[in-house]
Length: 89
Image (cartoon, rainbow, N blue to C red; front, side):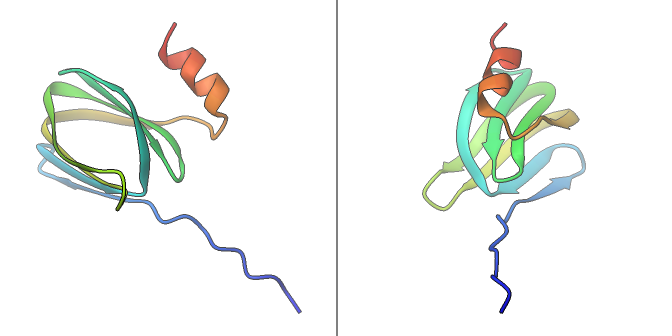
């Protein structure tokens, strides 16, 4: 009998590069108007842009909404220790 492994749920919806809705967010590592660093169920996510604003944050339901001009999205590895060292040089 095979063992059923639950995969983490993480999704993102980018609307016209001005509104980003994410699920599966477990932590906000840091943010300012140019960068938002999140920990998701699929690893760390770095969002870069202009005039970024966290419009909705609910870590209990793992939902985040970000407004502003989204220029890039980059995922890093699952290794939290290496992620934090990269983000906080």
